[in-house]
Image (cartoon, rainbow, N blue to C red):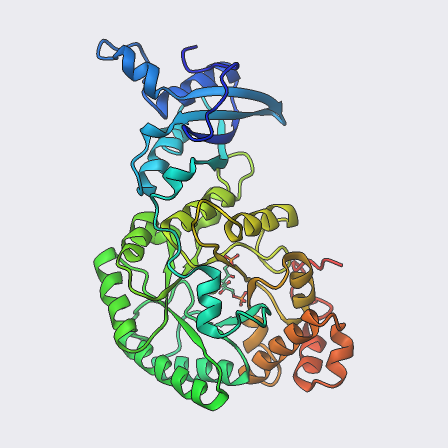
Length: 421
Ligand code: CAP
Ligand code: MG
């Protein structure tokens, strides 16, 4: 068992340490195979192995704790195994072939820790939460930002999209974004949409006197993303969105490394293909850390309440991790989204505090009086929540909010929406 050493103590500045959950008929053998395959080993002894390679670069499983039907293991990887600033490469190591090995029935990457010096080799967010707040003028009044996704997800033409965006901004929304599956389809070509929506943004800004943000979804192959990002910049945009899992970390790093001077909004569509099965895959926490290293400024993390999976402990842990201090990488603005409506705002503020972006698509455009009223209702819910005023009380003097909970409060139409009291 060359790769299992239960007496080994990892070096804080010298090792990358992963925490994995493993299921196997033979856990110790699996531990050895995992550490071997993800560092310098292979399935058999090889004549080309050098003593110095084993000594300096072999990964070591240093903790095996039985849990559930398997075990939680900790693996130390010498940091020399990793290339500075390369997200795909760290994944090919710590989350590569090991998921497919026959000796392992299930394997889940739960977390990883990296030395500060290596962390600093990644660009991280260009703006981070404080940078976004500075742009939007909310550095002092630190209420949650509110955002909406233009709905229907796809199908509107550029003119219709711009109208929905304008109504949302005029109603009080800070942040409007494209949906994850809207890029440049025939019915809504990217260039025309971006030009029209940014025009609407300017109009809303001059009418409301408030700074607004629009996340244009540039997701595509890297060279197309760059062209689209440059188009957004040339038309006065301040934000771009990348579907970071479908575009991949390489695509995200490519865009971040251009230093475009625009906020990067990270949408996590497809994350659950890795993260949902609690016994296999890659949990959202490591995905979120990688996104911060690669350089997103805002990231979808789940909402606890609403339509997307993710319990309170897990999602709050992700928020604290990407929003907290880490080797000088700027804190990421966490985005809570998915099945949210004004009625969820008090729960969200109670769980996460004020340093989040609260996003509602259906919960804004589904308001009985339309998008503008829905945007105002969401803003009113935030005003009430940060002042600790119960929503039903605030709703008595705020018409849009009063009409909004009437539609959603019992959760009848969304029976799957959880309410946290
Ligand atoms: C929300 C949303 C977001 C999800 C993604 C959607 O719309 O636009 O993509 O929030 O999930 O398409 O579902 P609604 P997550 O407000 O209408 O639900 O934020 O968990 O990554
Ligand atoms: Mg969406």
